[in-house]
View 1 (tube, rainbow, N blue to C red):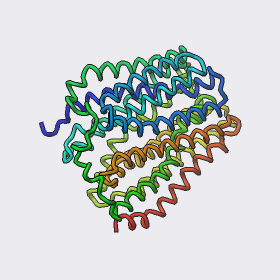
View 2 (cartoon, rainbow, N blue to C red; view 1 turned 120 degrees about the vertical axis):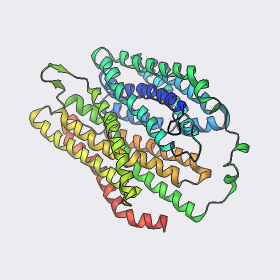
View 3 (tube, one colour; view 1 turned 135 degrees about the horizontal axis):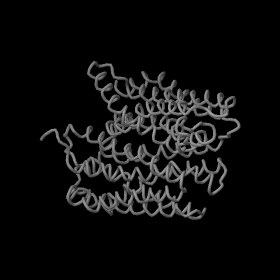
View 4 (cartoon, rainbow, N blue to C red; view 1 turned 45 degrees about the horizontal axis):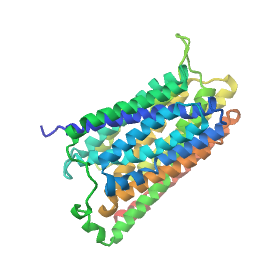
Length: 427
């Protein structure tokens, strides 16, 4: 019995899977929809995509604050789910004004939903429960299962039958998640997250009055240092939904040889979550094995390697873009290789960064610093959208040098900074 996780974990896994199905189904189609239906230029579509995905990571600060102070986490999850479902259905109306209205609903809805469902997952476990990390790993698998299925369903409907069908499917997915949530929240969550946090009853309330020690200040400085490098990673990684999607549409041969069927561009968006599902358990085992032998790389080294792996991915697409000038269309295996390197980079950075913040943040600023960490992804997406706006189908090979250098140079710098940063933090 001791090895079992709370039933609420699998309930929240299901809700998160449907929410991510909705988000990634829309995300796989958004740039293509703006480019092909609303007739935006690739630059305009990429800029809007970058601003949208950036704001998605900015509003959780607001949603978390409102949940703690006024509404409670559970109410915020419901508000967010309804707003996101509404946003998907509004997006199905082919009109520029409705595009902006829909994106507004989605940005606000995500802000209410995203921070609070993760908070409730954590509250399912006692502080000393050693199953907590494994529980979050299971929850993370729900995210990627939804992200894997979404482009296959919404992408097929959107590209083969009409973009509005893809967005409606994403909205239906969010409604299913909402219905499941309403059905099971009392049964599986009991009173967890039902009310706002009462600071006077919160054990960390007293901690808020304590001054930071010099060691805690050093740790906060360390978090902010890696936040800076986190921006370069996500600015390049998020090219998946913009410039790499356009490359898949315009330069990649998507016709299956024996079936004479051209598969949708959005299918490429399923490669990364599928690889996460396959590789995450392997990486977890590798880190544990290295730790047991006292050979686990530091967080700084993992970040450096993650950036360098992303650079290798862009090196592949840089080579592929040169081949495309000769052959017109390149094999889809090039992009699959790109996403393989990018997924390895993600596994070196994304879960490692979250773990680092939760481990090093002073207790009185733990939630705030986690929100600030997400805000670095906001700036990254703005930078990524600006970068993707420079994409030109006639000059791809020069374009892909930018994200290559944007990740390679910071990655190498981090490897050189490893010893001085670790020495300052821990000695």
